[in-house]
Amino acid sequence: MTCNNNLIPSDMIKQQVANVYENSYGQAPVMVFSPGRLNIIGEHTDYNEGFVFPAAIDKGIYAACGRSDSKLCKVTALDMKESYEFTLDNIAPLENGGWRNYILGVVNGIHDTGKKLAPFNLVFGGDIPEGAGLSSSAALENAVVFSLNELFSLGLSKEEMIFISQKAEHSFVGVKCGIMDQFASMFGQKNTALLLDCRTISAKAFDIDLQEYQILLINTNVKHSLSDSAYNKRRAVCEKVASLLDVKALRDVKTTHLSSISEQITDEEYQMALYVIQENKRAQKAGIAMKANDIAELGQLIYASHHGLQHQYKVSCEELDFLVDLAKLNPNIAGSRMMGGGFGGCTINIIKKDAVRNYAEKTAAAYLEKFKNNCSVYEVSLSQGTHLI
Ligand code: GLA
Image 1 (tube, rainbow, N blue to C red):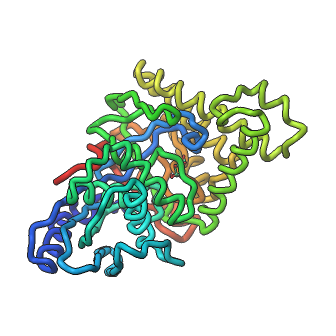
Image 2 (image 1 turned 90 degrees about the horizontal axis):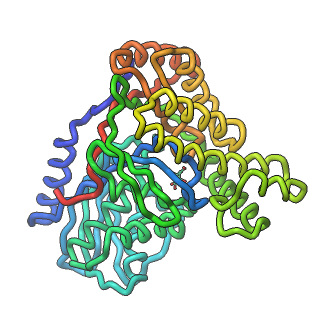
């Protein structure tokens, strides 16, 4: 069984980031932790101004940051063993820049607010598996904006910071993401999930006590390459349908309303918009189920979400469907679905605590046999959002 949960203890990563910074620059840094996120339900609803139900997790990015005594900024990505130097007067996205574009995008976003930065050095590392759909990118963006805000006393609010992070992703990385990931990473609270209204950017906090159940993430360890372009295409379909219906976003649309334009859009587009309308309702119903401690209802909503993501929104993949189909066969699992943008990454499972070990072993074996590749199992706790450490 590959249960590579907490392979590297987070304290070690934190220490390593701090040591590398201090050894390189000879001064004590500003240190920040910024978490990744999971999402219980409400997928692809955020950029439709709907509801999502995410939580920050105890895996994330550790950043150490301080002033530079030259004109250069230097950023070191420990996990990649790469560094990048740049000056603040010439910030533009790099072709195939990878992680560098998240940093540059945030710096550019801060400039756009009119706030002044001075040259800085930053070292970061983390324990979010890349491509797992746990938002390592939002964690990195938030870590950078939060560190720079602290270092230069910029006075940015957390809300301003998440929009800077999101804009970095739109204009420097090219993914037209919603606000869920950055919000959850920044505003997460311990043992809490946030039912976020993505129109008003206001969230209701839910204590997460799943009684005899717990959350289990299973990573397919695949990330299909079309995911970014497919994401932007889905978003464009949603915007097209909203504009045909003359509303601001699909959040404002009812099913009957959608039927009135069925002749003007393809069946595929119709199903995608229908999925968003239905998923938005499911996310709100999940809040009610959670409040009532109705795990069975929550689980059914989660299964229905996957069904929609697979057949209507078409952002799932064979590996994710395989894991969800396995879960359905097991009475100890109340609900299972793909999580995040899709085309790989993790499933989220609501599973009986005493069934975790057995299920993890069986799933790992079945997955290996089917795909000749390992899946990974993570037990995560819900954690505080981006903060100084
Ligand atoms: C990615 C995006 C989010 C959201 C999810 C799908 O994680 O970054 O904004 O749209 O996909 O729910």
